[in-house]
Length: 262
Image 1: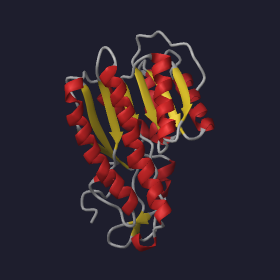
Image 2 (image 1 turned 30 degrees about the vertical axis):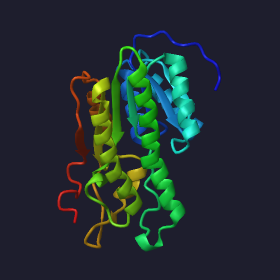
Image 3 (image 1 turned 30 degrees about the horizontal axis):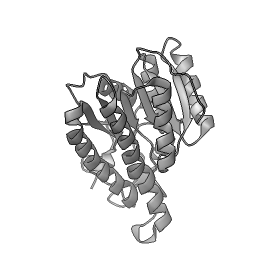
């Protein structure tokens, strides 16, 4: 990690994982525009740079933007990320745990390779835990104490798609993690909530426009929604006072087949 001068700022500080594209990019842009200083974490430096450029171009009066290459499934990467946040800003007000992968879609459970299972679990669940643990430590120790953690769940946290055992299991696990963080954070003014998202228009959901398997065995095109509307919801959750918390919220494309999915 390169030594860097700590930035003196009254702006709130956020870390966004999976910030190189999709929901992470939209949330980073929204936070920057609202005056937050945002640390962009992700595996690909080029896409992080694109997000930083989008944030600065859209909101020239926004906060500072810092890119940190991070694989959230690697404890040493997570440690380095939060050490850099501490060195540069001295505190942390928000962690948006967004990094995730769907895994090999359409693979029957009995054919899913162990390596594919591990990759999804290590990224979606273990990565979320590692980042939350590091953020929790900072928020507990800093003065003034406290902060907020928002986990990106999914509507798959309670209604699975066909052939999605790894993704669905991790998103159900995310719900338990959110509840535990919310409970354990109470004495330290650490609030934790979860946003469950359905069919935001990103590269990951591009297949929805072509048709995806349904619970009845058919394939159907599904509606999607503007990812910017997800970012608005995260921003609302982020800017609540720590005395208030959105524990769980669901934002989805109005016509998607969730209710009655199976």
